[in-house]
Length: 113
Image 1 (cartoon, helix red, strand yellow):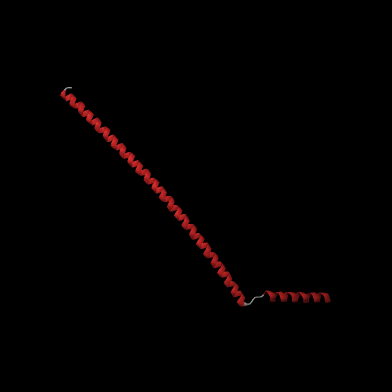
Image 2: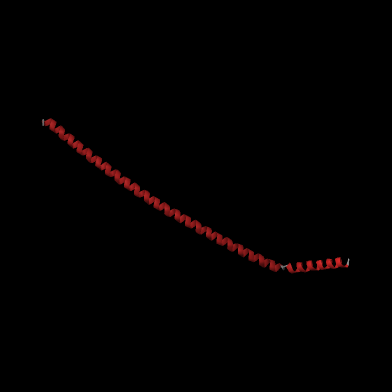
């Protein structure tokens, strides 16, 4: 029985001493909370900066690609316009030559040649 009382007292003393060793003052708790808040704020700031830079780079890349596509489309449209104008000019020339040739033949018929 003495052994169980001794063990009980030893257990009580051990638990009491560890609870005092683990307890912090209110000031230490506030200080730890301040450090945790500062750390969390720093992490949020870094994440925000990273997200902003990533969005900027994606926007810049998209703008660059759009500019190139617009330039390529402008070149294609310009080329097609040039080719179309050349075709129309050629067709007009051929039509004028045929008209002139037809008038010449008509003139020959009228004069009896």
